Length: 178
Ligand SMILES: CSCCC(=O)/C(O)=C/O
Ligand SMILES: [Fe+2]
Image 1: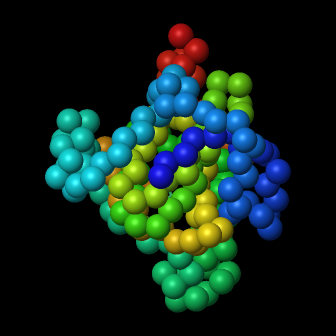
Image 2: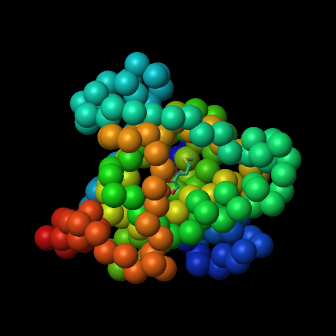
C-alpha cells in the first residue's frame, strides 16, 4: 500500500534504507503542487496508455538487489549511494514498480523531503527539474521497476552538490512558484 509522509531527516549512511517516517503524512495534493503524480496502475496495457498519452518513446527495466550485482557488495553499495544522492533529471520520467518496494523522496517548496513508499503497481511521475532521491527499503532490499523515458533510454542525473542549473531546473522552479 502506497504511503506518503514527511521524512524524519535522521538518515545516516548506515540507516538510510529504514523507513524514516516522521509521523507526518503528506497528501497526493501536496505532491501534485510539486508536479509529482501518483497512480495505481494494475496492468501493462494501462501503463502503455499513460506512456502514449504523455509521448514516452523509451523504457527500460531496472532490477535492484544484491543478486543483480552478483553479490558484489561494493558494486551494490555504489549504486545505492548513487540513487540516494540528491539529483534531478532534465526530462520528466515515469517510474513503475513491477515488484518489490522502494522509497522516492522529493523536495517540497520549503526544501523538506516528502517520502513516497512505493510497491507493486505503483506509478510515480517525476517532473523534469525536481530534486529527488531513491532507496530500497530495509525490509525487502529489492525492487524491479520500469523506467520510462521521453527520449533517450538513458539515466542521467544532475547532482545537487554540483550546483548545476539548467533550463529544466529553472523552468521547474518557475512552474512551482508561479
Ligand atoms: C526504482 S527506479 C531506479 C532509480 C531511478 O531511476 C532514479 O531516478 C532514482 O532517482
Ligand atoms: Fe532520479
